[in-house]
Image (cartoon, rainbow, N blue to C red; front, side, top):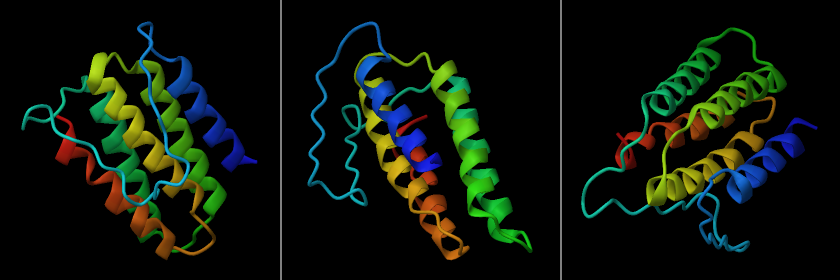
Length: 137
């Protein structure tokens, strides 16, 4: 259920979140593990403080779960989804920066949905979250 909720939430965000409508084509056959995000003329995209903080919190949640003695996949997904909701609520990014953030979040959503009852699945989520600073500042 959480998986469907997350993907539905992400798709609604992508479709309706900005006042200025942008055309975004998502190739259904594209690899979810290959989320290409170009830089802004060689520079990182500017993100608002709250977005950056939410990504850092998601990294902290993932690291904490990787180091925890017990592991509950649904609890991790719920914690990450709660922080994702906060990110979406507080995001003030506009234009192409917002478009590429949306693309980044779709890649995150696929990885988050792949979390199963084994800690090794968190590694890919963490590695992906840590790529955020490659594209955004």
